[in-house]
Image (cartoon, one colour):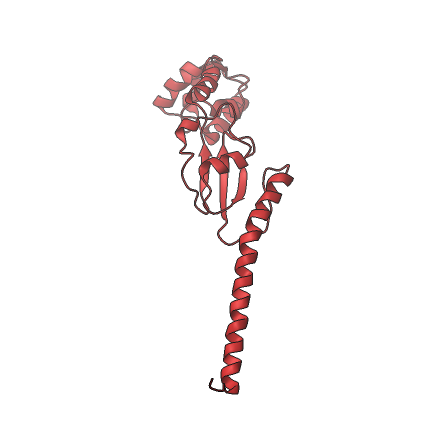
Length: 194
């Protein structure tokens, strides 16, 4: 066997040390990921978010909508939308899971939105529409903003106009308020009373 020079021994030793470090890091990375997520799942958090040290390949996703604990979650690589919804406490009773592909793979930075059933949203809107006309004498800015065509500025102008003129005796007086045109007046006639 040929004799190695001092330089060759140093190079071979450096290569061996580098290989040992890479191997130890790979072993530590594989075992650490599962243990970190198991600890996070069993420990939980009252705020709905988990704070664990990031591992290579982890994904961070924002889960919102009809879930019990909306928030930002760290998920292991290869996770699916169903895993993220489960991590967020699962769907609420109003969730429309048919609108979400639960089998899709997650991507880092993705937002998962679980919508509500359209029937539940329509019922909420219907309840507001069935309340009847709003009184011009007592309407708040927030109540006026609920009317189609009325934004926060116009609602504030209506309340200011009412206060400056000591009340309103007719819906027709609102045509003196800046920003209220003929189309808005028609919407106001159905939704307001003096």
